[in-house]
Length: 212
Image 1 (tube, one colour):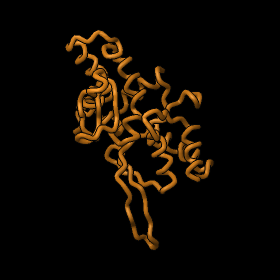
Image 2 (cartoon, helix red, strand yellow; image 1 turned 45 degrees about the vertical axis):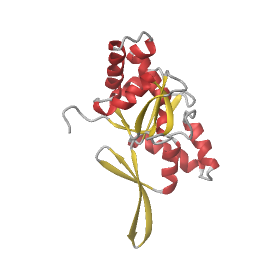
Image 3 (tube, helix red, strand yellow; image 1 turned 180 degrees about the vertical axis):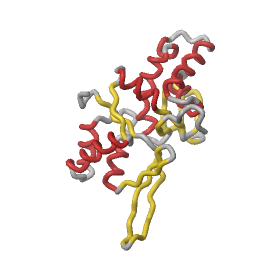
Image 4 (tube, one colour; image 1 turned 180 degrees about the horizontal axis):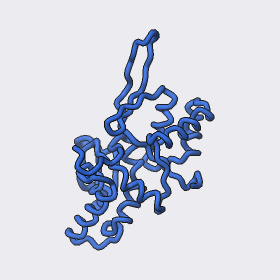
């Protein structure tokens, strides 16, 4: 997969730092992935955080994450090695929007909301707001909003896109970006870093069917 086409998506939910006394004072950053908790040192944690994006417009790739890491004074070789390791360990996934890797990603992962749905944006009625009480932090389309809001109830992101499309059909929508699950998925993946960067959501591995 070419670097510029490969969108990096972080997996897991950061739990904050843990301070340990093991001979010497030690701090690690904890990331929960499924039922496991991974411990990262500060530099690796920054690399993982940068894959969330730094703004709603950011679409992190390997090269942009490395460039951002350099701006924070991180060693480029170590940051590059961290990305390779995270891709192998499942803390990062690289996908190509619109390609087969996007569908495979959606079938194997699940999106979890972390903030509140604030409903329609009164200034732009076709858009929906996400945030905390009366403090919106992200603006998304109605299709992405439905995926984000209900995705934790679906076994995986692909099913959540199907559910959102079916909801739109029953509501009488005619726009194919809301009715076609593939287009719903494309919209969700195109907007996901806007939700990840402000901690409005996180992505985890999909739970096997029947698992509590």
